[in-house]
Image 1 (cartoon, rainbow, N blue to C red):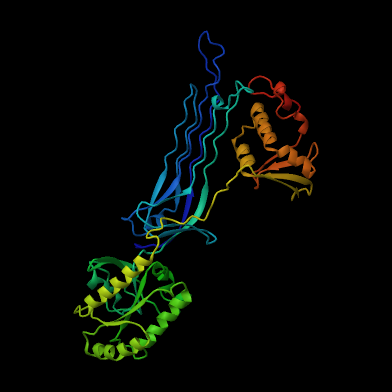
Image 2 (image 1 turned 180 degrees about the horizontal axis):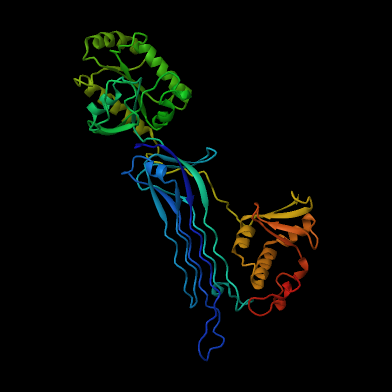
Length: 457
């Protein structure tokens, strides 16, 4: 059974906004009570929140679809609808949110960090909120906006100070068990470690985390073995420790060659060149291991790599190694301007949503010219409009005219009867443009729910 998952697809759907209410206050002896329809409630958001008690993304592996509740519709007597409930999804520290195309949306680090992955739709205004000096008793209300739907990829990158890397069966799991209270699976066969293990180590006044990454083999950066799946867990570390098996029974391997191969895989993966390195010459409790470690240590010193002869079984040399790692971690922390970067959001919203665009296109079905209007406000207003209500349609025409859409249509070349499409997709609204309806003409408005400008449509 799968117990550790570090990459999943998430399908998040926020709640729809509730519809506004079109209501008129009715009371005995008060025939002109006025509009009293309330606004619709806002739809719930889908929110990712870093939880230190969560260490895997397995929840989303079994249940990738999550939806927040819708906002409630408004009611008469100025009663606004209730907002939809947010859905808060706990994720591990170090979760990266990316789009399906691989674009980074957010990097969630630090307990309590949150990110709204899908925003709930705004509730529609009731007719009480739409009343003005020009329209005293609206006979319509606005629809709530649909909630946002997003398909994203969640990828876990472990947040550890030190990463232990090396060949399978080099003794990485044994070292982390000896240095910390972590108890990873340990056995005498390759690829015992199938998931990254984290342990907490205290050396003097420095407390740091250490990660035991599954064993790497040649070609790991290209997908061989388990390396490609778990190399991402090294990205956040500040120190890399090569664990070398000095008592390997494989005759075609030798310590320096193992080190060069692992370094080549790290270089192929990229982004790890600036991390300081240490070398742990492991298994010196065995006679052959001690001899090999004594031979290799001077050669590593010539390369400028600090080497420590250790044994995970007898604990020999572990104190010196742990303090050496602590010193490098402390140096890295002191050099950081910002200790914790809560998140990186690279999806900025438009500063001004008044912008719109009118483009002349040819219909793919008929080849006839059409005028397509796109922009945040026109598209939102169309979604809010009840097209079965003439007064609501007239209100939409007034809003578009005030925004300047009609003037822009004239500039682009639209004439009475031209096909105008508002929206970018197949669900856009299509209508025949008639500038003669006189947008903004108050005298043309009829009783509630009607508009004389639309009688001949």
